[in-house]
Amino acid sequence: MKQARPTLRAQNISKSFGTNPVLTGIDIDLYPGEWLGILGESGSGKSTLLRILGRFLDAEQGDVIFKGNALKPVSGELMPGHDAIKLIHQEFELFPNQTVAENIAYSLRFYEEAYRTEKVAELLDMTALHYVSGQKAKLLSGGEKQRTAIAKALAELPEVLLLDEPFAHLDNHNRRVLADAIEKLRHQQKTGCIFVTHEAADALAWSDRIAVLRNGEIIQIGTPQEVYNNPINSYVAELTGDINWLPGDKGSKQFYIRPEKIKPTKNPEKSKWQGKVEAIRFHGNHWEIRCTKGKEQLSFYRNKPDLEIGQQVMLTYPAKDLKSI
Image 1 (cartoon, rainbow, N blue to C red):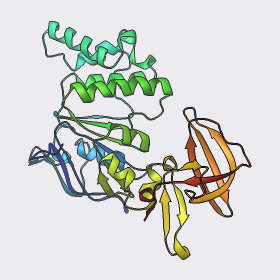
Image 2 (tube, helix red, strand yellow):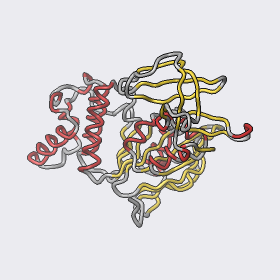
Image 3 (cartoon, helix red, strand yellow):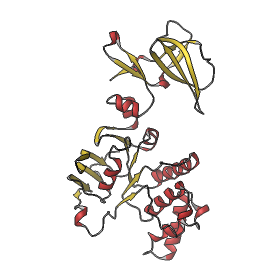
Image 4 (cartoon, one colour):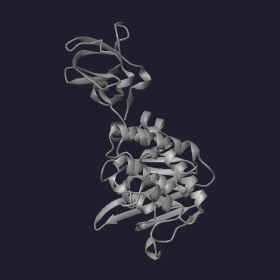
């Protein structure tokens, strides 16, 4: 994925609001066609970082470098933003009294009508918006507004797309439709994208690399598999998915294991942990089984309801999947 030169680079970016530091020493690179997910809790500085990268806000320290050239401060420009970098805010910034098609076409107003009509139809198809193409933006659902904003940004294809919480506040139906649109975008276009999210599942699903942001600092960056399977600390481990904690020898060290690595066994020789089923929770595509042994607790997943509350179970797991932090 990595190329000789990143399309966009944040170099030692720091930002404060008053006496409150929001970002500290941020270094990230985005390579051509790459999707980089910024994962962090609310208040971690994700949206501020996007505004700095999109050239709507100046950092107090550091540079934003586009294709090898440091960009000028926003305060020195007549208009904020950058032609090759498109930021889609959570507010979407659509023309409320114009239709979906008109909002998209506005970005193409300097092109010939035939090309404009063809391009709008292509973008409506990509974002699954044909059925509301004639509807005013103010009447759209949140998911429809999000997809319209993406289509509008892609009318003139940016080299970098910045998405601020693209799946926030969407119901399951609109999440699936937007996910389909993003899947098409990833495969059909060569636009690089940085998106921020507080949902680990979204970062794991859509990123080529994930940067974990905590209290304004990048604490780990790597592929989704690297971050999920080898978190740098307990915070990243818990942020990226469910985990079980187990005490080490003589209580000197803690170990963790993901629930999907644990299986019940009927063979005492394979058993590594025994306990009683305390709770069974249905999650749609699997059941979560929670077991206890004294003060210890383990959860694991099953694809069928073959255990009962109060039942004693023996559990096993591969030794390589029991990890310490």
